[in-house]
Length: 254
Image 1 (tube, rainbow, N blue to C red):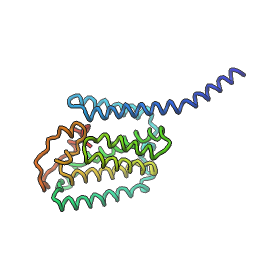
Image 2 (image 1 turned 90 degrees about the vertical axis):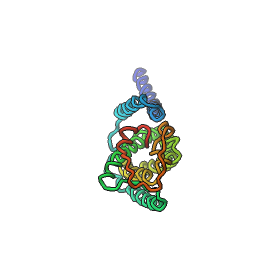
Image 3 (image 1 turned 180 degrees about the vertical axis):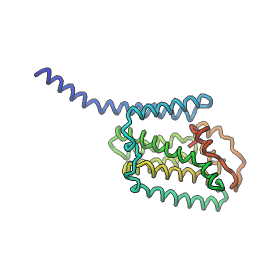
């Protein structure tokens, strides 16, 4: 009987310490992954490229080891229509911002539909990747660490915004959007409407705010080292391929 009692006690102790160990591992994953992101953002080339691939590899391995399914990351049909209103709000706000930008002659965008796809097709995919990382990785782990979902959402939004420093425009915008997206995700558990809204907001910012002020959506060291071009009150013919943003300067652009 003593042997059975000891075994039962050990099982109880193991069950009691398991959540603590999981929380500790989640915290390690978050800290190490975020440190890699900051290192990529603030490191000059060519070392930046090596850190970029190291960070990419880390997140792939980390997600794979604790992968709970695509539905857990928000890649599902259920909940899509419940949170699709955020896409409508994004379209309305983008329309208002575009109107004012046109009135103040700061609007700059590709002309033909094919140019729009070339310019912002890559950014649309990048928006989905960011939301998957934001909700499927950071928020998911913080929800396991903190019982209060509002606290987890605020912390997730904060680390998202801090990764956009020192850009004075993107940092507050990403804090607001990050918190909003996390709260919506907690209720709907669907990442697709958030990715669509993210792409709409990002493209809106890119075409309504002059690159000289936005530094072409750069963050970190890329923002500091950005060389502004002369400001044109109207530069409709200006086309900046976002494919280049993602493939060439993805670590320093958001």
